[in-house]
Image 1 (cartoon, rainbow, N blue to C red):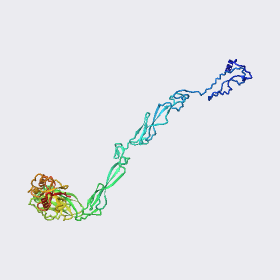
Image 2: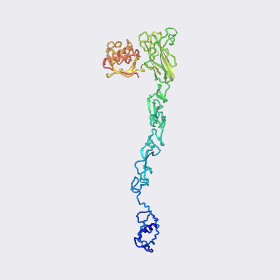
Image 3: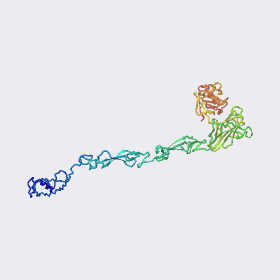
Image 4: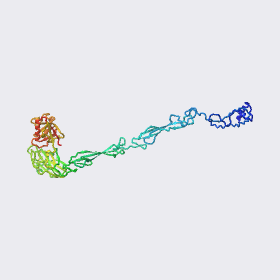
Length: 588
C-alpha cells in the first residue's frame, strides 16, 4: 500500500483528481481485479497470491487521477523457462531422464555363465553411465548394468563354464560332465580300460574269446567241432564283464564212419574204432579187421649188444651182468577191442652169427625167435607171419617156440622188442616192421608200403602201376612224390648195373636211377647215383620177391626197394623205352 501510495505520489499531477465517490473514474489501467488473470499464456502454476495489500476494492477514495504505475512484484516462479541449453544430459532445454545412457564406453564388465549346468555358455555384460535427470552432465552418479548378457564362448554339452572377475570360459571335461562338474577318470588299468584316455572301452570292444568243444551228433561218424564265444566290455567297468555273443560251430576233425567223436573242455577229436562202431560207441569185440602199427620201417635195435659167451648168461635173457640187449619199446598202445591179437611183420639183422629176438606184449609171456647161425653173407631176416620156417632166402630161422598170439582186453599195453647176439662177435643192429592184428593170416608185406608208377610213354603195362616199395632208412626220408625219367644203371654205364662203381658225371642228371641189389652196401649204390645227378634211386632185389628194409650210412637222396620180379619188369621197360618216366609215392 505504501508502494502503491509511493507510486501514486510520484504521479499526483498527471491527471484529473478523481471523485472520492467515483473511484471508477480513475484511469488506472491496472487490470488487477485481484483475480489476477495474468494474460501470460504460460500454464503458470502461478497461484498469484498477490501480496498486494492493495485494499483497493476499487472504491478507491484515491482522489488521485494518476495512472497508478503499480509495479506489482509478483513472486511468480514460472516453470516455462529452460533449465539447460547444452551437455551430455541436456536436450537443449531440459535435463535428459535417468533412463538415458550417456556414455558408449563401459565403466565396468561382469562375467558369468548362463547356468550352473553342464553345457552352460560363458557370457558377459557391461555397466554404463546414465543421466541423473537433474543435471546436464554425464557423471557417475547413475551407473546401470545392461539387462542383456552376451555369449562369448558357447560350451559343448560335456563342458563346464567357469568365470572370474576378468573373464569367462569353457572347460572341456575329458571324462564327461555331471551336474555341472567334470567327472573323474573312469579307470587306470584293466582289459576294458583304455589307458591312453583313462576311459572305459565301449561295449563294442571284444575283450575275451572262449572256445567250447562238441560233436555234431552222438552217432558213429559224427564230426568234432568247436565254437568261439566272444565277450565284450560293458562300457561301465574295466573288467571284461559285458555281453557275450556265441559264434557258429566249426568242424575241426572229420571223423570216419567207423569212428566216434569225443570231446572235453579243451579239445574235440575223432577216435577210430578198429572193431567197428555201433550207436555212437566203439564195438568192444574184435572182428578180425583191426590193425595197429607198432613199428613202420624206422626203428633200429640198439647196438653193440655184448653178451656172456658162456656160463649161466649164455642163451638167457641179457641182464646187466651178462649182456646188454638193444630195445625198442612202444608204451601205452591202445587196444580197442577184446580178442586174440597177433604180431605180424619182419625183422632184419646184419650179423651172421646166432641171434635171438625177444618180444613182450603187455603182460603176456615173452616170445622168443631163435635164428640159427647164417653161413651165407648178407645177414638174416624173419617173417613173423610164418609160425615156422622162414621166407628169408639167405638164412633159415628156426620155428617160434610159442605161438605169437596174445589174448588182449580193451585198454593200454606196453610192447617191447629186444635183440641179442650169442656169442658177442659183432654188431647185429636189427630193424623191424611190426603190427598187431586180429587176423592171423594178414600179410604184413604190404602194410605201410609206398607205391611207384611208370607214367610213360603211353600206354603203360598194368604190371608197372602200383608197384609196392620199401623206403630206405638212410637219413633222407621220402615225404612227397618224386618224378623224373627212369634210367637202368647198366644202360648208363655198361657192367655197372649194381651201382657199386662210380657212374660218369651227370649220367643220371635229374633222373631216377634203377640199380640191382648185391656186391656192395645200399648206401654206396645210392651215393654213386646221387653223385651222377640222380634225384632218387630204386634198388631191386637180386634173389627173390621179398621186400628188404635198406639200412646203411647217410645218403644224399631218397631211395626205395622193390622185389626182383618188379625190378625185372622195370629193366625190360627201360630197355625198349629210352624216354621212360616214373613217379614214386611215399608211404601213406
